[in-house]
Amino acid sequence: MPVRRAAAVLLIAASATACGFADGGGPGAGTPATAAQSGAGPSSRPATRALPFGTGSRWSDTDTDGSHISGTTTVMGYRQPAKSVSLPDAASGIPDADWAVLDVKFCAATDSTNVIVAQAPWSLRYADGTRLAAPRITSRGVAEPLYSVAGTAVRPGTCYRGKITFSVKHGSRPTGVVYDVDSRDPVEWTVPKA
Image (cartoon, rainbow, N blue to C red; front, side, top):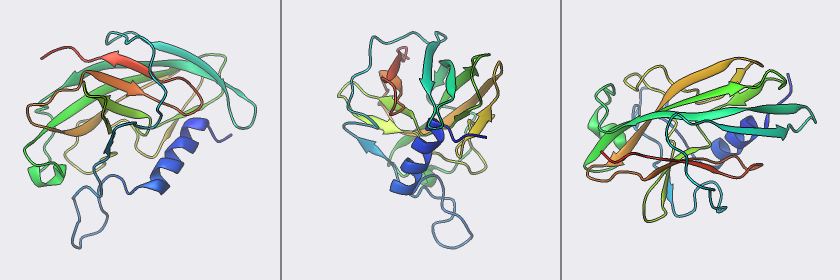
């Protein structure tokens, strides 16, 4: 199976930063290795007009092996605070935090080859322009079904849906959700007011 661009982005991001929860039973187990928040996010390219939740963004690309990949990426919902998360407050890495859950879906086009999808391209955008990258948390207690952290193949004509758990500062609320893969322009969805 050919390696997909989305997987390459995931591997680059994973090797550049420590992500998710620390392994093992020693000190640091069950705590986030890093909380990624920056002014630019994965790309400094501006997103085009923001879409409402439930509206898909269709895209088409050429994979690194020259094969055609395409599909539709959609934000289905966002919940903050998220009662479905049962992680300890200390696991958030952010003082005075709320747990939030992003529900996303990807459908591969029937004329596409397999597409690898993962959490890495997803982030929350705030009014001041900062982005909070998907923390790629995989421990027990995250919202389910979990959107793949390491990457999963979506076959042509099929869909994959899951949830991404974020730790956000209490009292703050993102204004947008950004999907940013290096080979394409970023796409943004508007987060409804609480």
